[in-house]
Image (cartoon, helix red, strand yellow):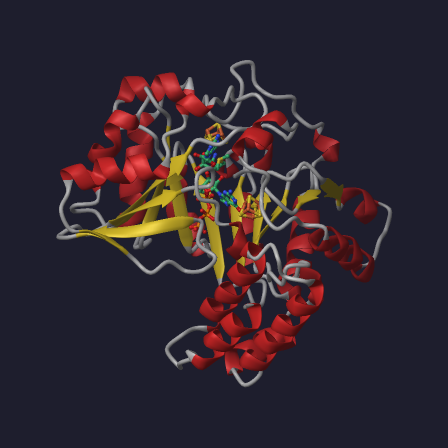
Amino acid sequence: MMRRCVSELARRRRPDRTVDTLKAGFQCLVNTSSSVRATDRLRCSNTYSTLCATDPDVLSQEASSSEMLVDSFGRFHNYLRISLTERCNLRCQYCMPAEGVELTPKTELLSHDEIIRIANLFVTSGVDKIRLTGGEPTVRKDIEDICLHLSGLKGLKTLAMTTNGIVLSKKLPKLKECGLNALNISLDTLVPAKFEFMTRRKGHSKVLESIDAAVELGYNPVKVNCVIMRGMNDDEICNFVEMTRHKPINVRFIEFMPFDGNVWNVKKLVPYAEMLDKVRQSYKGVERLQDHPTDTAKNFRIDGHAGTISFITSMTEHFCAGCNRLRLLADGNFKVCLFGPSEVSLREPIRSGVDDAGLKEIIGAAVKRKKAKHAGMFDIAKTANRPMIHIGG
Ligand SMILES: Nc1nc2c(ncn2[C@@H]2O[C@H](COP(=O)(O)OP(=O)(O)OP(=O)(O)O)[C@@H](O)[C@H]2O)c(=O)[nH]1
Ligand SMILES: C[S@@+](CC[C@H](N)C(=O)[O-])C[C@H]1O[C@@H](n2cnc3c(N)ncnc32)[C@H](O)[C@@H]1O
Ligand code: SF4
Ligand code: SF4
């Protein structure tokens, strides 16, 4: 069965199909087939390699990429999320407890130079996309300098940021000059009073200003991240869809996920299918787009709208088979899965004088231990992880 599927992939290979599509198809087969024996996995993996062997994109990727970034399911990780800080100028209910979180002492946080050293190691090994997150990345005083150094790393194509937009509009022109070329801004409500309730802080109009500033500066699309919680903002889904009518933005409705201290409950989760239903009841011509195999989002266009909408369905339809993401936390811990509790420190070996080969060994071993998929929302909710503000999404 497995062999037949892989040959089918090979037979259907066409120049207009990207290698990523083939790779994701291959990964889905491996990850979803519980009956696949190790020998079959190997055979499939070889078939996949043969499929790709003549593709110039793959040849060049393989020449520059490292085994360190491939996990035991054949997933290649080209996307590193770096959490720059545990601090934030908001206190979102879904992300952190009201009383705040324990902060790591400053001496145990990665320095600017340590961040650049680790990022450089990943980029020279094949990472071509870095996302800066937090906490709130824009509260770091050296954020422009960090962007400048990271965007200068040879081989990095995308330097992205996820931000709450509170102080972004002022900083954005400089950040763009420093090489920030992709932007996701979080906004969960269009009602100022609700914003204050959800984030426990003021600043709604500043976030709206930042979204407009980002559009004016040519970020396209500006992605707007909207965590939907039942009884809180699920009545605003269509108002957010309306924002895409004239603005070239991509509004992404995110299923509420459980993390330490965010009082997750399945009753507060609005499943993807229900959100999509709501949109379809109010809009005609809602059409699914072709997603990239490594996308976190399921993407849709709506007839006549300048922008698009998406759903990030981590809880009801996970997308782990195409996972290409790794995480470096502000304290220097390396985390291979958003929901995997296991972490390994890169800060300690660096401060004990490890060389790059030693660091690569530590990283590679952690990547190889990565699980095929997360454990499911009910198990995740029972397992100790960190508060989201420490992980960065
Ligand atoms: N389950 C899961 N959720 C993720 C992962 N990466 C990001 N998310 C969630 O997706 C939502 C949006 O995250 P972003 O920081 O905008 O990152 P992204 O979705 O990778 O953004 P793009 O690179 O623009 O696609 C947040 O709720 C994240 O926690 C992941 O690897 N697994
Ligand atoms: C942790 S924040 C860090 C970056 C920045 N402070 C911001 O809010 O955009 C990264 C992303 O995770 C999302 N997020 C936080 N807690 C979440 C949760 N419990 N479920 C789903 N998404 C969550 C936020 O909405 C944001 O888009
Ligand atoms: S989601 Fe972002 S803005 Fe909100 S508390 Fe968490 S880190 Fe801060
Ligand atoms: S839950 Fe873990 S394996 Fe699944 S997509 Fe997210 S980081 Fe990747």
